[in-house]
Amino acid sequence: MSGEHGDERERSGPNRREFLGYGVAGGALLLAGPVACDRGEPGSPPRDRREPAPVPDVPAFELEEVSIGEIAEGLAAGRWTSRRLVELYLERIDATNLRGPELRAVLETDPEALAVADRLDAERKAGRTRGLLHGVPILLKDNIGTADGTTTTAGSLALEGSVPPGDSFVAARLRAAGAILLGKANLSEWANFRSTRSSSGWSARGGQCRNPYVLDRNPCGSSSGSGAAVAASLAAAALGTETDGSVVCPSHACGLVGVKPTVGLVSRTGIIPISHRQDTAGPMARSVADAAILLGAMTGVDPDDAATAASAGHARPEYTGALGEGGLRGARIGVARRYAGFHEAVDALLEAAIDAMREEGAEIVDPVDPGPISAMAEPEWECLLYEFKADLNAYLAGLGPGAPVRSLAEIIAFNERNRDREMPWFGQEIFLAAEEKGPLTDSAYREAVVRARRLAADDGVDAAVDRHRLDAIVAPTGGPAWVTDLVNGDHFAGSSSEPAAIAGYPNVTVPAGFVHGLPVGVSFFGRPWSEPTLLRIAHGFERATRHRVPPGFLRSVPG
Image (cartoon, rainbow, N blue to C red; front, side, top):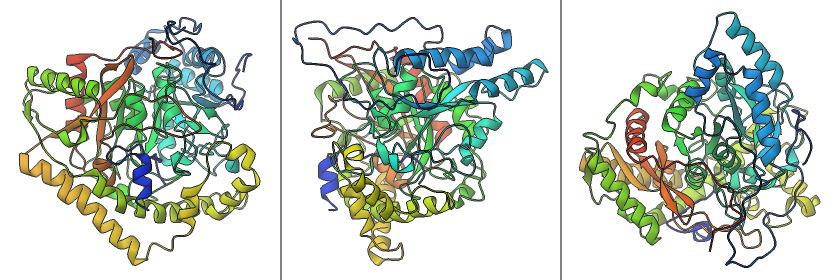
């Protein structure tokens, strides 16, 4: 599982369909649990495109764009209590999730959150604080398990009401750091690994999540609710998960910083999986500093996730110390031109980003080639089908005898019985293809793993980094957000997530500007365990350009 899942196939090289073809409420919220169960269609009636796009009435919010560091300072100074923070974020969710812009970014909030906040306030009053996250509310994607007042469902009605027997490792780490787990964010159902014609951000439980910058546009990725929620300040930050693009794409589309860590830096135990080779959870935040704070709290060797053993000696309990001043000075950065060229305006933003990095003292190597995404796509797809079946069945078995479904086959049958609710817009072709796969001992699977690794890592990222002695590779994260289309599915224009995702390497996306009011990011990726270097570079770029601005909740692109 793990994480991310979902990935969602936010793909570029081959577009989503080409890739898949290879394989070939009004009222007070009051912490009342589910908050996005009204599954109406997104969007509004057609209007004269010459009219300016109207902005929904979204009330002013005192925590808009407030950073984790600023919250920590405010708590220490007595400006807020943790209880008051929870109340404020709940009011914000109530005003924007099912009312106003109807973001549909949050599935449910934890009825225990106020009590947790009270306990953390008492600790602070007694002189004990656990760090910068003490008493700070954050959201989790709804495939990250928690044993609290919320459920963990991957957005599916098949798991409705499911509460795992314990917290996921990463949730437990965040609680230990003092974070308040405010609730669960909407997502692309099953992390966007159900249909070749899905709409990112749609789940049967939550309906279609919207992009808070332009509401008829898609928030991208499977961590769509996490991205939309953080962009709109429904929480201080959030966790997403990624198999291939599900952290970086929604972060890019929603004007955020997203960190897809090296696989093994963060445990996947207790996260609904797609692939044990590629899954990971990662922070999504409004600044590099906030993402670094969250990342440090998430790391740790987990005896139940063998991949984390490799993080010993690489993981850090905090990453903010890697940021500092002059993060771009002397950095050797290669430009992956192969992953650009799909949109003129995005190319212009890439050129501006390169110029800004040069001005800050970076040494630019242009071009470098991490390899063709089209060649990586086929073996990746084969691997994911095998791994999804094996890993999901193992996760469901771990839920115990009370699990509402016990296998992928049972989920398929549930969806067929509930076709009107689960499959009103698209089907489950990916589920059916995965169910046909054999065990992980099949030669076809083993050969695909070797080929995927060679293309993405050995002949891809590793070769480019070694050949040019790079600290990082830069590329556009993706294209501008497309108009959400439940009938035809997603319309990915471009992507650079694949090499790092398939190799299991880190990837950090940072806002790089706007195209017709839609955020666009650039990604920095490189060798495994290079998070400190990538965060330093990303922070330097962020400080030099300062592209992050809050969303305006436009109904559509003006003009």
